[in-house]
Length: 151
Image (tube, rainbow, N blue to C red):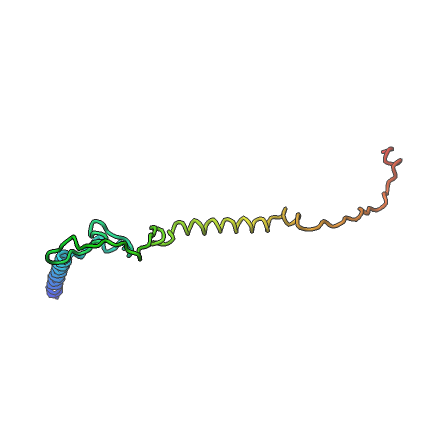
């Protein structure tokens, strides 16, 4: 009986090994095809890509394709682009996350400082108008001054 179980187990192990090998070869083939197509694969897939960022090692910025055929450069007219507007990197990318976070922390510190000033007992006493105190009323002494001197 146990012989049959070990036979089934051996067959299952062989089948799993064959499947994993087929899976590995398929992923290897896929990576090769993607690399041939110019699509990066592997360690770069987890990196976030900024849409406005230009990868200078992968492409030429502001490249204009050269028209096919012969071209006479004397006919070229270089006119200024009137729609071009100067932009800083901060305007394009927007506010930086750490700058926004620092501003929020500064605001939180100010709010906390203000709250502490409002809740501080000294400030509470400073804000209230002092009540007029009445005279201290004591019972009449049971021993007179002369009796005190004798003791």
